[in-house]
Image 1 (cartoon, helix red, strand yellow):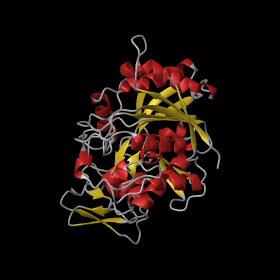
Image 2 (cartoon, rainbow, N blue to C red):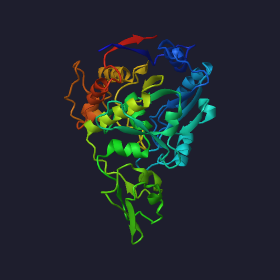
Image 3 (cartoon, rainbow, N blue to C red):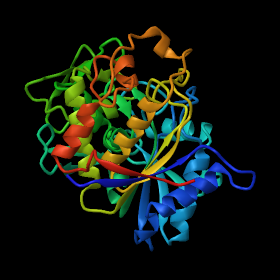
Image 4 (spheres, helix red, strand yellow):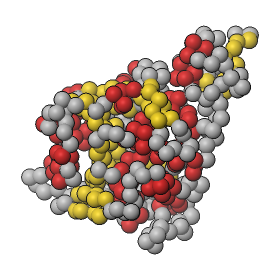
Length: 375
């Protein structure tokens, strides 16, 4: 297996050079200028952060990237898809308001925000997964697939379902429409909470298989007719239709990788991860627990698999913050280098290695990397 190049700069700055300047130098050194951006729509996949969470990336990082792309003739936009769970980002209008509340607007970033799967989370494209074992097609937000070039800008942190969240999760899970997210999390069919159902019948309008019927003013789903597409989840504004969330951690990791492959196949792509405020949980939480390690730096690569592996190796090699959630965990597990395996100790029912090994297996990238440090 080939070795991929991953470029890195730490968080140290000089009096005449900010971290943002260092980031711009880093992505140039990593080769972003080699991409032909001229008159090309460029999706910058980011997590806008759930309001109340303070660990998400500041919009300043996105502006550096957008400005660099525009200087190369590209037409960038920031994008994310709606969430499956109940929150401030589960439909397009609320999602845009949440992004603005967290500082993401054209003035702060130099480009527009577009919710890739639309107002209800149902604006999607079914993309074939080349070599997929778990998913033959991926339900991806339309605006992401409309882009000519795909760039991921990720906040590296822990995740309760996949162990860690980096480039692969940002691309794979983050690019899935609401139906896509259900396919990632759920091995079965959606169900109805009748206490929340108002009988508006909008869900039935979005069901292409006649699986939804009504009795006593409440919706019911016929599992024999239901294909599990999840469009009814996106259609329901009352959050009465929901997923069972019964996919195993290993299956979830593999599906994330397959969705990422569907997004990236056949077009130029580039990836940046910022390893700061490394919280134990996803930025989808409406709170952020304290960081588990000190801030490390910024990583960039054309290979998202090598990028994630470099980031997790750097995290595990860093000293723990003893007042973090790690003080409450069994910390006996080690990684291959003998360092404490922080994310496995925090989320012992997960195995983050599956993201890396399965991504290698289906040809998405390499877990072997050469780390090139830029001062």
